[in-house]
Amino acid sequence: MTMKMYILIKDDVPPGFDVLAAAHASLAAYLKFKESPEVAEWIAGPFYKTVCRVSPQEYERAKDVADSVVLTESALGDREVAIAFKPREEWPKSFKYYKLYR
Image (cartoon, rainbow, N blue to C red; front, side, top):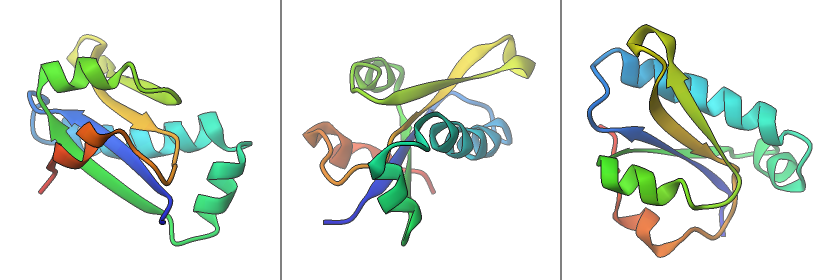
């Protein structure tokens, strides 16, 4: 199996802020979990990331998954915009149904 980091972006985040949120989310998750063996394995490569757009309901349910960091955007009134998860091999089944960001 392959280690990967998931980044979920709320689908109502305005254009421009979504890309910024994804970049910040990747770095925030790395910094939060950099001492973990999973991150060491992931960073050794290839370090895959999957970025998805999710509905508010999907976003709220995903917050229950362990080992995550929630991102807010000050320019949007400190509104939550993204969640990034510590890299891992196995993901909850719901993650494979999230819409890929394109």
